[in-house]
Length: 118
Image (cartoon, rainbow, N blue to C red; front, side, top):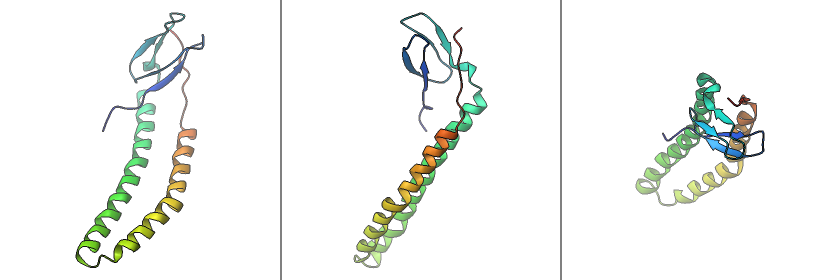
């Protein structure tokens, strides 16, 4: 599954850092201390789950395509490789831009949090 994505913190002095959720960061420039526990865990985990769902959807579709076409090419006809290539082409030309727009829209609509130094 991997670690959840880090949280980008920009200090009031201009220094910035990517910090894992649940960690604290002390700015090297001004000494302010930032705690990511100020972000509600339920909101953060909901955002992580939503982004992970997009990845699972994409890999599921790719696995389905491979699972269908590899046996067909191997056991039915090697001529189907052309059909698989055409479907892959249309997948990347039509579906992927749609998928990217959905992911960008979800990221833009996601909640943002304003942390305050301790």
